[in-house]
Length: 408
Image (cartoon, rainbow, N blue to C red; front, side):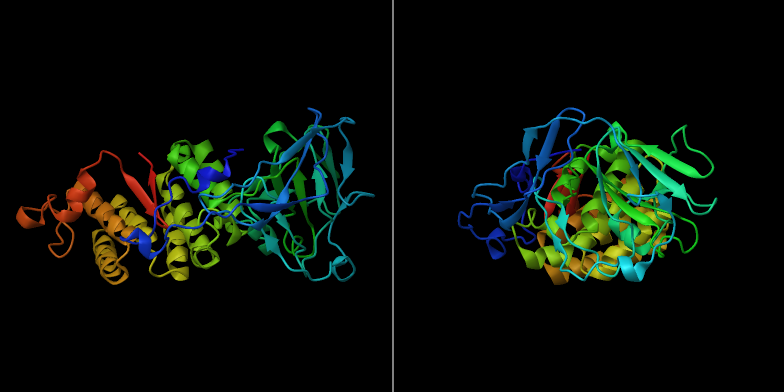
């Protein structure tokens, strides 16, 4: 996975207002404080295992950052065959009333290096979670011939039994039979979590699902996604798929995966985390080599439903309408962003409006109030203040949550 130090999470952070002191003044030095887990991951074929921690106190930018996971040597016992329920391996519906765990508070954490989560999904019927390493074999004895094993992309999809938005059928080993599905944990599964369920109608909600943690699963963070965008991961289909998975990986644990990025500001994290995730999902679906425009628009709308003043999602959506040649909707979107920029008075909104102005100019259109499919002339030309702001740099900047990220 794309591991990063905690310092990288705030290295490029900017405030979301024109006057930086209005939001983040010089913060006192606060060091990271953690409590280490008593358990270690399963010993890997390389003879290593790790343990993580929970964060008790988030550090400020000038404080001591949170440590990396601890690693120790261990004796690898060889690959194991794991029956999915620990006994007969029957892959079918469960007695939910008897298997349901007691309700517990869900605790979610955000820094690379810390435990990804410690929680019980109260009221959810499922198989017992499994910890594995590369080379282990999962065995699912089918209760019905139509049962499959489907890997959904996130915990949200897992909890909602949603098979329509990403994911894929788990590839079966050659040793699988009509009545028994076998899957060997592969090198590419290292440090991930597999959200597995049967896509047969009603099977998942009846408990036919299981969480499989492979080695040292690392929760996604907003800062990690920033890094992947900065490195243009979305420029290949494989990279775009990986980036989408990492966005989902922080989205379904919001707001805590944004805490490091916001320097422990719980209010900002709670307000913006999911909206940022949906906005970025829309961005990746629009910018990937094979764009998925309808899905991108859907995620922009989800972001704006959560945070109607999300200027970055509004700007992205404006570019989408330019991309597909929808002049009328592009015009109304531009006008909406102008109104947001005037009312919000934030640096993010000002930069977003500049970006959208530049996109109109690049298309050869002149935005409102001229609102023409021909290039701007005179005072409405590309030499306007907003366009000048964009032309001083050869970099196309994406802004979200006050962060400026180079993507070209």
